[in-house]
Length: 193
Image 1 (cartoon, rainbow, N blue to C red):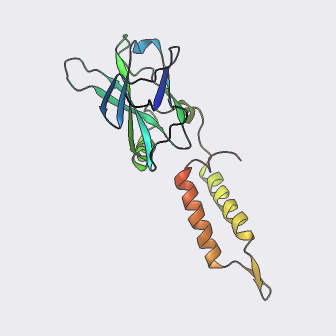
Image 2 (image 1 turned 90 degrees about the horizontal axis):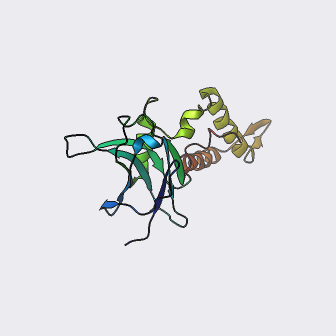
Image 3 (image 1 turned 30 degrees about the vertical axis):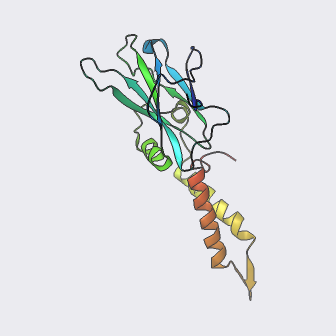
């Protein structure tokens, strides 16, 4: 068997690191029972595990649908570089009975996982830490972007006569670095520094 990549912890239960099923080389099912007995689940990358570049792990709650062969998949969120673990609230996801379920983990393109996370509406199952706090206002985000640009560009300022100037090339360099940081850490502007 290949080295385990992920661990899951249904609240109040032991850590599970061995998938019960591996439908494809990049998707794993971790069987759990008694959905009613816990309301949160932790999913994390095991120590030393690094996902292939440009990928992230999409997390799904998989529950059976009585009378149907195909189970119900509920996208919970994702983990990956820079966010190696997450806690997901899953209460209310079942029928209120102790039902068998699984947590599906699928290694997918990072942009696809990020887009699904952005597309989830407020009533959907989302990571607990996202639901507990709202991000900063648009005004605060704009101020942080301007502050970031000002701090970077200030070191390039010079004078032309009595006018302070910044070369356009410096602005282009800031934009390139800023865009790269947004791609690698989309939430950096939302955190208080």
